[in-house]
Image 1: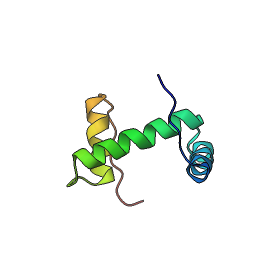
Image 2 (image 1 turned 180 degrees about the horizontal axis):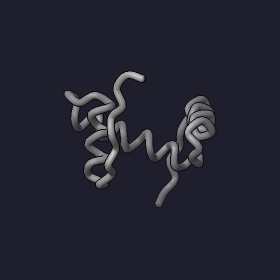
Image 3 (image 1 turned 135 degrees about the horizontal axis):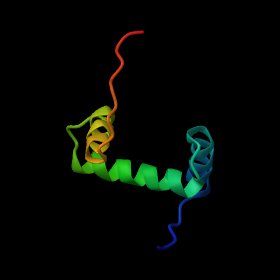
Image 4 (image 1 turned 90 degrees about the vertical axis):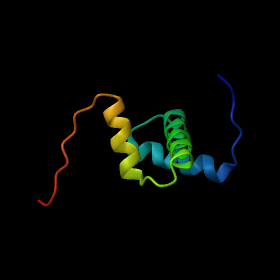
Length: 68
């Protein structure tokens, strides 16, 4: 484990997002880092595709709801 230095504005955005997403500040930063790494490694995949693939890898069975 280490320390990551980020600017105050980004830290404030992480803090605000962590409240919305009900995560700790560190968990929110880790989430954004992981998604960013996956997006860079898979530039042809959308965010939804990346999340769907991660759910499959974690053996989460989620059904897609279409319409209302």
